[in-house]
Length: 377
Image: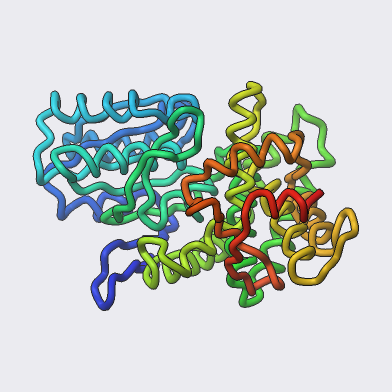
């Protein structure tokens, strides 16, 4: 077992536990006398680890609730439904709410726990790569509002996050790849040699999958994730360590934590347009597109590179493609601009864009949306 801590000063405020087997989750729950579990219904049906978790919950007499956890369901209605169930189930101020699922689940359950009875404790068992390296770490919770991404929410830390890379073996290739974008984003922010390590491992995994016929690719992918379990555990731990360090130094996003938004202003605009046009684009796929936009903007701001594509844009796009993502944005920049102007991080018309000087070295750069559109055209 490996424990990575999130700090406030010298005080541990959240723990990320990286464990090889799901069974050790039971020992993490021993100190909590009143646990209530909320699980994504898709995880319950498709993830073998869900059965193990259910057995742990049954032994402890833990009440459980299944929810639909899609972007369309990521609303206050679902949060209120969770709060109503907690009330009906007798959850008191000493409760611990355990969320089992991907980033949508952890976001909604964390938000529900944060407002129920003015705040009760909560913990996460993330079941997607995206949630393990990003969504479940750092304390951001929330829901979408009026078709805008994560517009309502709070920052509040979970008691613990239990990360078990083995649960990823049942994750479809496309959902796994969505988490790849967040992992690579993290290593672009702080590298220490892990960006290239991730590219090497993830591209090798994808290459074997991509050459197989559809009927045999799914089985291969399950075996592939299992075969690369040690490499994935290392990369996940390193990504978690980067994010936990940033959050410890800037929990409420006053400075350094803004770097974690690399590519996300663009990505949230892509997701909003995808909802508007009923297109199937996941958060991770939108982040991949956002990273390419950020790379192009970085080249034009820092290096005066006005080629299309720019040097860094081309390099990062190739890396993403090699790892199973295809980050070509289908929407006009003008439509994205209208949405980015309403970004929740905008201040007096200025957005803190995160630009890449080189892999492992990023910084925030204040620009208006009009300036961004002119630079990217």
